[in-house]
Image 1 (cartoon, rainbow, N blue to C red):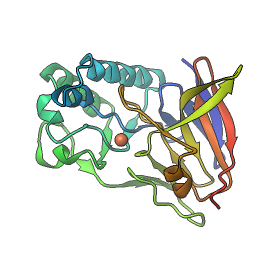
Image 2: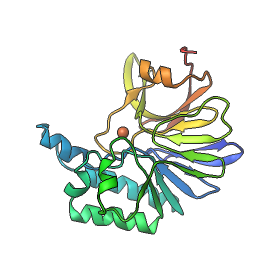
Image 3: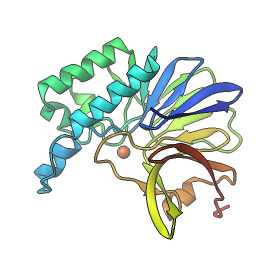
Length: 230
Ligand SMILES: [Fe+2]
């Protein structure tokens, strides 16, 4: 599986093609926006898509964990798609999620979709609104300012970008990397994306020095984004 090695703050990190970041020194794997249960939720609303997103997301999660063997996994929120998702997930899937949670010391950050995590005891760990270790902060929605000394990891926006090849344009999930923050792409199957050139993300990215770490079909590549909102 492809991953891109990067030096962040003199420390080695890896951006993985499945959509996670690995902090080598701390042995922490970070993923975001798993949205477990989105397929069930869409079927309830009349969109009859194959209900295999939970299995597929779990299988990707197991693969990236196997690849890095982390000491800790931090999920950055929007773990479960809606308030009933934890109740509706098949018990075998829930068992797998709980086994991973315990074995790999998961820290679940709650996102705006995670109301069910407050009310249910079905998950074998509590959720947190925020986590900090060393210089790193972890939350669902980016709040960092340019002068902050901390380095923040967040999710929420499901970033994607569009690249042109031979006159055609293709969409790819991407990480957004600023001087002191990183916004992760969504990890879950059936999760869409918000274009980095959208007005919403232009307002969020008030920083001229932005790199995109683009998850291509064969490679992960770094690309500059000049944000002209500043
Ligand atoms: Fe999300």
